[in-house]
Image (cartoon, rainbow, N blue to C red; front, side, top):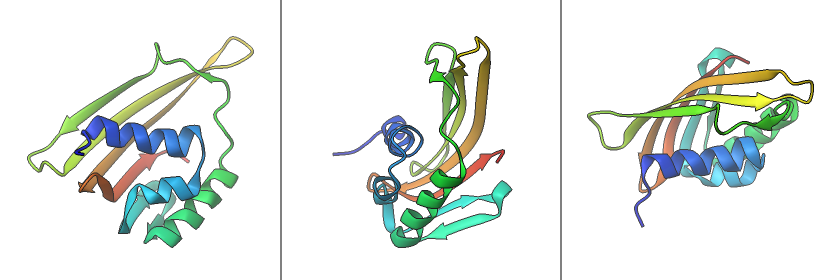
Length: 126
């Protein structure tokens, strides 16, 4: 089964940001997969390092403040000349209990292989 770029992105976001399942998140990568967050000076390589690193990131970063507002959120996918590389832009809007909104924006560059993430470069503000 071949996954679309959007399906790969959605699986990654659900497993990580929504369910905060570090082991499941690491399983979306090739065995030698790499995750980089350059603005945090973070690099994880291999599924064991990915799982423990994602678990630590989930512990350090609180869950989003509020409920995801899917109507106000947006994501854009950019295909490249390489069918195994795509770029995702995300502006996730959260509705807070006090009536305000909070937006989390990021850009991710995915390199995939056989439906798994081989390399992900994640640009977000920590």
